[in-house]
Length: 507
Image 1 (tube, rainbow, N blue to C red):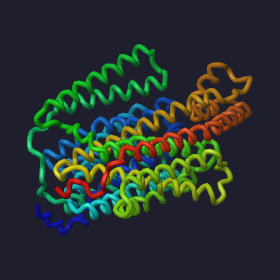
Image 2 (image 1 turned 180 degrees about the horizontal axis):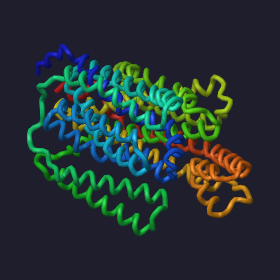
Image 3 (image 1 turned 90 degrees about the vertical axis):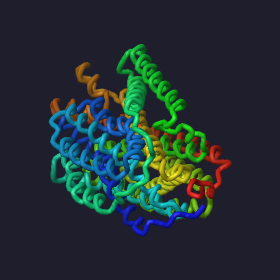
Image 4 (image 1 turned 45 degrees about the horizontal axis):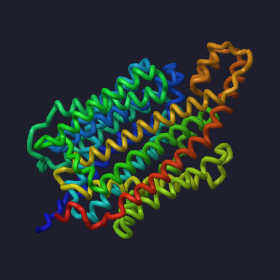
């Protein structure tokens, strides 16, 4: 079969979609350094803070597959441009939220905009780059922009919080969109290959409802906020909806999600990497952001600068992953990079961040580099295993792994952190029991309670909170290291029969 002639504007198209992806990434990491500020400004409880952070990736996880398949039906360009508009409007709404409930609602709309953007970016890259070598480099450059956005997020957020209120971390998305949307409108090709057939709205709603119910049930179960009977009923209902969805997909002539994709070892390995590694990374970043500000007393800008090595190093991991995968094969690159990331986390678990020296920033950089290589390898695996017209569906499946992993990672780390904190904190003897119960929920709650106490009592409570939070450091990072090391082994086994040259572009 004759190889299609490459699009002469393909690198400009890549530039446009990378610009579109940038605000979505900025929104994820900017918020981490703003958590202490918005917690106290909105007087948000630990549960409300988790929902403010978590609702975005968890809801997006339910929306990505429907939006990815919709983009395959009507065109990536239309859905992408619509998503940019929705994302900009939701960012403005979030910036001026007056309560935790309003901010959570704004994050729901942000999730819709992000879900429209993310699968289109990967789908357009898959449609534009037919050559496997060029595609690997394009995905590497895409990963670079994602990591660079993540690296800039804490620094930009910290700088904004030095001079403005917490809402500025959302408002910054609006001027970014004023540049990105016109660039995408002008650069993206108007003519696209699309998949035939209608978009099954009923299947989309079924998937969204089932996934959200399952995720909410998992959150409620971890948090022990509801009786086990209620949690079990929610989980069972969500699982039943997903089972009906799967049955429909297997019987449909033109399914929304081609479940046969999951039988491909490269796609299965890619999804495992996306789910577990992104979850561990999100949990570690959130833990660091809170420890640096609440415990070590750093400003948001100082906290952002402290975390730059992990994200800046990740910015160069994308192109390196593309080159290494082409040269040494996906299996070795993916498994080895994840194993090195696990060892980096294990080292960091027993370091004093109050006196980091040179070795802590160096290992943070190694962690960012190796995780970036592993995650970019997952993109190469997934997008190289499908035909170009199915790129949106495959991209949405991969992005679902990222977002679901991020959401569950934040949930698990947040709940684990809260339970460890509650067990470790030693309350001042004179503190009333109701205030002690409130302060034991999280270090943010301890600061809120301390603000209403006499100076001596407040200082004693904050000191107890800092000591308790520090005790979680080694346990959290060691647990993340164990999970990623197990993932490295699973990826090595799953990709045992994978051959780099076997991908859809050669069909």
